[in-house]
Image (tube, rainbow, N blue to C red; front, side, top):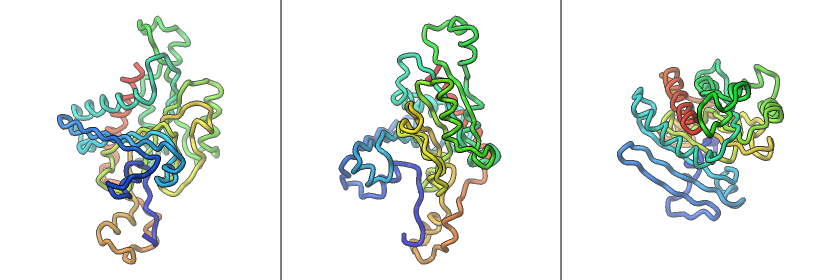
Length: 284
């Protein structure tokens, strides 16, 4: 594809650029399929710099949960997805011991496909202020996680890099781990609003749509950063190429355009509840 660059935030799609039987040194893949719930979980581990270079992704673990009916308004199915997502989050967060967790909702609340992060934070069960005021006794539990949340907005609204805001909040509140929620870009329209990616490699805001901002990672903030994202847009040029399989038929201007489903408003609301419920399950 010489006339445009295929953009994706999903490590699973980066792996699919290679033939299935091609072994990439420094990259391992594990897959599990729950036939009853129709949920496929794929773990891509990028273990070396060689693997990172081949994949175009930082070293780390990327867990992708694919749920074909996730875009449908089925509350029972969304509950099952929340439970499966909670298991994946538990694996990366390690919540056996009490933790102070800062949840960051990235994105622009005024732009619906980019509003996932703010919507998730709005549905979270926040506990830090209650524990600081009344102690653990208020929850009648032996183990209580301190959960706080922030929606930093975007640079056009604040005049500040997201990293500056999050790093400042982290220095003041001293969380043990940060969970960042963001909308992603996918390579395939089939994965729009049907896929959730969790990674311990942090996040690079805007990279999937060519709008690179400073990364939110352990190296830049000083604490572990777990990223949770759902692809809500796909590159328009990719859709055209997939339809005609002809590079020359793709107008150059399309590589700056992104497509999202027409029911994105309701889908974002539904997905935000699914993700926040998973976090509430893990951190309750």
